[in-house]
Image 1 (cartoon, rainbow, N blue to C red):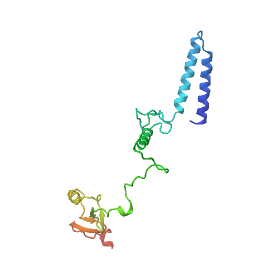
Image 2: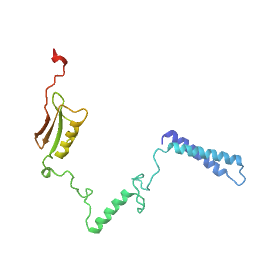
Image 3: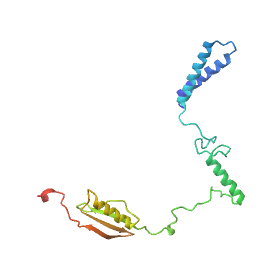
Image 4: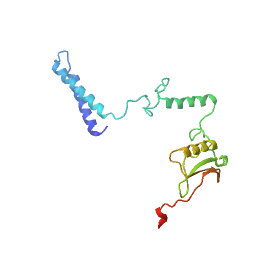
Length: 189
């Protein structure tokens, strides 16, 4: 909410407060219609100044977070944290000073890293050089089926090859004959 919106909304609410103090049992209908118009104006100003959605939880840290109906503040994130703390107290483990327990990385440490994974690279001859023509595959049969489908296509290349990648490259199979094509017409005369 910017300053102008804050000022206008404050003014509208103060006016409504004055209307509320002046209300009696004998207040004429014309005055009630005026109160109603001022009330609508205040609601419209409030609608303009609200930028985000309504909070889904009562949590000040995660007002629009996921909801847990069983939590006192309806916040699933905070309730999960509280449950973890209760579990650690029950099992006798206490969190370290620096925060949570260290979690092993899903990538592992350097000594645990596996060798490079093998992949099969489908390549096509573009007239000058071999270029990758599809996504590298993890399965050789799938890569060969992909090349077979490319060869049957309407815009098939002159030649295709399948390259095995495993820390080094090895050409496994070649379909067609790659011929050097001069890109200049008439042999560059």
